[in-house]
Image (cartoon, rainbow, N blue to C red; front, side, top):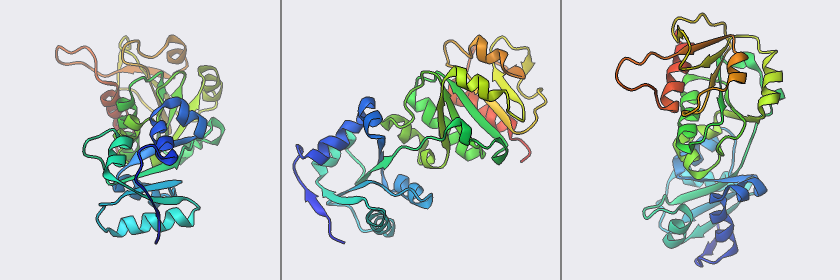
Length: 265
């Protein structure tokens, strides 16, 4: 399968892909960058072909790479061969992956969520750390959650750091963005338990009786869940701190909550 070769660091395609490291460019194009054959394989398994596949000229032959090239072209995308220097420039790494890809972003609207399709869903208020968000998306995938809902001013789930932290789960987990006002109006029809996490809660996370599907609300690490969202929960719980630390990393705390809510499945 033939593909054009790009060797110039100032090539327009290279500049366009590099620009996807910037949030404003991702918002303008509706696209994002993913790195590595594993990521691309996850996307292909979920019928998400790249818009653009960049293959290093020193990439080793691999059946998955052949599949990626074929499915990219079949879906109307383009395959290009690039130099190692270009891969370094785009990935911003000294030892880059030999395959990079550009994908379309996909958001699920609130109205498209089917609560009954999964036992647990996660909602995050103003999460700011891309590594935390990516890890939460990966954890939600591992636990069989239906999706992740981002409320208010959250970090971009399609930033390069967030995507890397998902380890490919960005293609498997539905992602929704909404305002606090729209979320609160939508939450009123949620058929199961809505559970918030607060340091000042009196109920421990395993003691709460939950009706599925459970909707787990997590706030930012410093401020915690806002009063407005906490008031909209059926119950607010806390994860007990047994040592000197008085709080947990957001991704760790979300993982604990998600697995507690899905225990016994």
